[in-house]
Image (cartoon, rainbow, N blue to C red; front, side, top):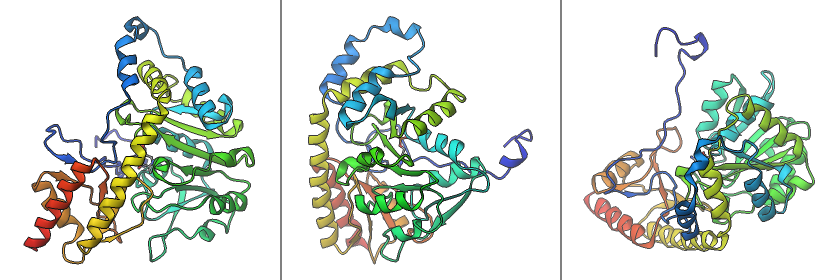
Length: 354
Ligand code: PMP
């Protein structure tokens, strides 16, 4: 850091993104991307894009894409917010709704970005411990009427909450915003989008990065009451009004036209997840019950760091976290059948050596 940095950021630690190695020889199972390419219609659309459009700024309202998302999710375009990846939604939410003396709750084992942004904005947050079995006790979030972020399914555990439990949380915090981060919802959990019709204090955040094979396109969206959406727009327009670029707006629209393709891929991922879960369990791993496109697993003989390093040496990239309580685990993104077979083969070799 330079000597010019603001006093409040002097000891600030930024989020560490997962590795994106240049050499593509790795079986890359570390950042929960889709192993499948975008739908054929997305490539076709790219071929047909009139590049002259790039001369102009993008439509800051993104109304064409909003209308498509609204139709698919059964809401009005005014209930939809578009962002440069869903990380931006998390950022704007903390800017918009977390007063300094308002507490923000999120699980202790969760997406580590929440804590980074909370610190960035000086938000008064509290991490709520997961239970012994790594599940969320929803009653912990029903005590004090406050702001809440819960990923559903949770990351990196992959464990999902049911819709009725989420509704209890929303009802118990009527004067604050409950943000349900549904980055991984398309892999088998229930979406809370229908609840926006009953409650004005729930915001659902989703992304094109995982189930729609578009992590590089950076497209996130939120669904909620019009009032909440307008708050997010205010934050976005005060930060970077053109944050969703023209190419992403166009290509994401083409992706929505091929929803069936992505739903089929999601079914394949779920099938591969069940296969991987079983194969790892047979090898002596404890695998948490995942509804996401990854599994979180640990082995009694090889700790998480060693497993991660040995797999990397053997050409398979997974994710290891040094956070207390989860150091023993590795998070493995679910890829194609072939990729998962390679993973299991390499794990077997590592266990034999141990
Ligand atoms: N929420 C969770 C739980 C995530 O794991 C991620 C991806 N790291 C995001 C949100 C952000 O995804 P994106 O910005 O690519 O939409």
